[in-house]
Length: 404
Image 1: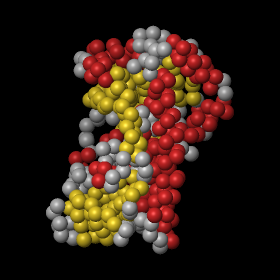
Image 2: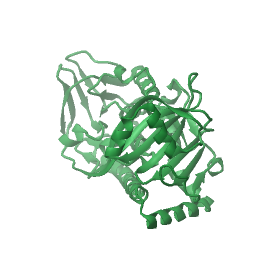
Image 3: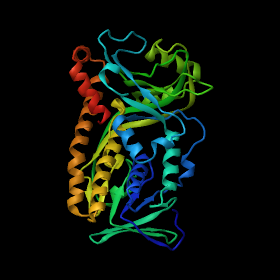
Image 4: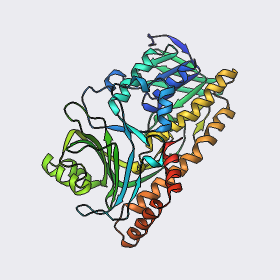
């Protein structure tokens, strides 16, 4: 439901940010009849890019369950590609990887480790679900002023539209203005690395297998994607390098870019060629000192941002959504106040300790693997080989990463 100017709408929950985290939370709550408003500075339709652009999300099993419960998964215009095998290696560009490797196979899980979904496909599915949900009010595009008090939340747009809510959810990304206006400080760790994101078409099938190749400049990941008529064999690439090197690599002509790709990926996929755009993002990690303020909680990147080394960034945000949705659905059924301090405190207790563990783990992994120190190289190769020989430990890693 959209709003006309000079209207006042009363809801239980107002979500700032219509990205995957905010939109999924709205869809999940709406399915349970919770009145929700979603506010975003951008209009929703332009977020749907009709052209393949190379960006994709790794969706863990727990996140897939959430998207199904929210009514989003079945609306994806393309079938996501399952990840059923993950090879973890260590090495240097242009050299064979260390013989001490780690492989997660179908024997380590009863279901795929995750699914690769195109970013544009998820956006299409989220928009369709939002627009069809009768208990969702959309305020986008809109520049708003937010007022919070013990009595509630008022969100006023410049054109006169107004939303009154009992709880505000800040899901407006790493640079969250909502978080800043609430005076919640963040701690930020720059890595001096940038992530290159693109897609490649390749000669040989990927067989739903992924590669995580640790290199001195940063991790290099190949993730299987669903093919198209034009490119039946397709994979996503997430490639970390030192900042200056990443900028040089992204600017290379296709022929030289492919040569650098093959120095890292080897011959496992045969001949390769870039498809779509290349994207480059500066990498850093950050965390909010707290997840709550008066009548407000943080979710997703507004609360935490981690290194992409384990592909868990969006899935961590979806774990916030799972915890928060469960709490808010429960309070709605009991007729309780969703903005009560006790509800906010329960949310922070459920999410922040686990998120901080993931923050520490991914930071430590990047510092351990993104270097060429011979002592550390030997230690991590021995560690990788040890995990390979311990099936119970492999399965424990898999279960945690899958979020089930």
